[in-house]
Length: 232
Image (cartoon, rainbow, N blue to C red; front, side):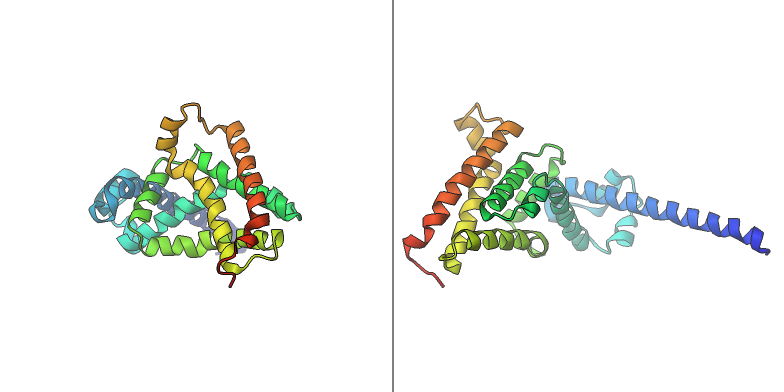
């Protein structure tokens, strides 16, 4: 084959490879989304590969091809849901740019609250994570290791700068208190909706709640070392 004839052939081959790669990626994404729905609806034990593939419009062998087995698929689905939440991070740039620890805490809390109020992600994310929290396994281990722990360590670093007199146990407790103030708006939302019917969690209210949590926490962190207890 001449060079002039070979060049179009190579170009066509590369195009075909890109199309195939794109199709594989699309199938993988559909499987993750379909599996998330099935696992959230039925739980890990009751979910079947056949139903997942049916919802994804994929061949029954697709799970084996892309993930290997059901357990690996489940772990990947949990990680996928967590990555989707991480992608919605409006205050990340502010947090990265801020040098003042109080402003870094403000950006951290605002980001956390914005994720909780984010309505764009599929409903199965929250249902699936609730199931995993109720019956934790290897998937939760992966999420904590790759996603949750780095965020907690970043928050703890902010707290050490805010009050260098804090012991490590006090830093941990302050971090848990701050995260807990945010999570109540997620895990207890049905209760809060009945207690406070005016609660909307729109952008404006989320910003106000985040500012309240930040100010409340800044005051508490400044005094936390005075409480005694384990400072190790």
